[in-house]
Amino acid sequence: MPTVPKGSSPTEPKIAPGGPRHVAIIMDGNGRWATQRGRPRLFGHHAGAKRVREIVEACPDFGVEYLTVFAFSTENWKRTQVEVAGLMSLFRRYISKETRSLSEFGVRVRFIGDRVRLDDKLIRLMNELEEATAHNTRVHLTIALNYGGRDEVARATQRLALDVAEGKLDPGAVDEETLPRYLDTYVLPDPDLVIRTSGEARISNFLLWQSAYAEYEFIDTLWPDFTKAEFGDLCAAYGGRDRRFGAVKT
Ligand code: FPP
Image (cartoon, rainbow, N blue to C red; front, side):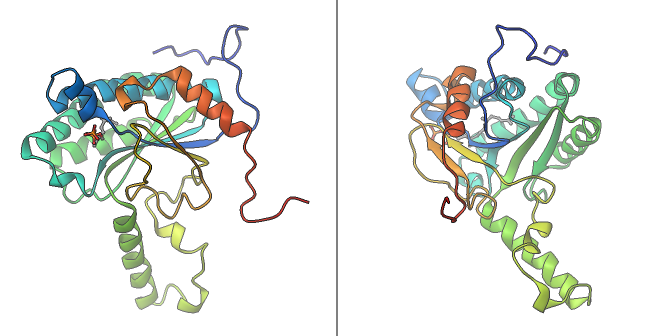
């Protein structure tokens, strides 16, 4: 990956004015992409993993500081044992292989989701990647792994309740500023734009609390076909949207 910050050449894409600071992506369609090619579903997941790198690298060109990708949901355990094991192996390999290049590009990687069900080796690699990139600030990449929005809110509520029980938190003072401090995403801004690929128009338990005021884009492209150009178009289209957060423009 190039280590020189982009944006100085006249041929570089222009950052859309008012573009999204935080984009979250539901990377859907890997399985169908593979099936269309007569290949096993894992072939699609491997192609999808390559796409992640390209989109991460594109972020600075479009002024995107935070990118959050949905890699494995709390519901994905219901897939066949072969697919689940293949995905876990892909995550381990991806982390081992990409640590250096992500770091050189200036990417800070974080993981959200419940780690308890993940294997020890994967957890160790995740911790190492977070530590190795902790000083980076160019792109904040968050990978949601064994993540579910409802599960996250439930886990946050458990921690909040514990603080109440221990007398550290006044229950009467709990408001909508309090709960997000217990969410996995507590250091991240809320997503401005949520993209879902593959033509499905649902959010599938992704960033439920955080996306309350996000703009949504549901596009037909299957994730392994998603390109930097399409990402740029969606960021530019976001720049033209009128976000009122419930207020009326005066
Ligand atoms: C959904 O497509 C995709 C997933 C459940 C896995 C997402 C994983 C990747 C893109 C690769 C790895 C990512 C990282 C960050 C290393 P699907 O399988 O549901 O597709 P389908 O709807 O066509 O069956």
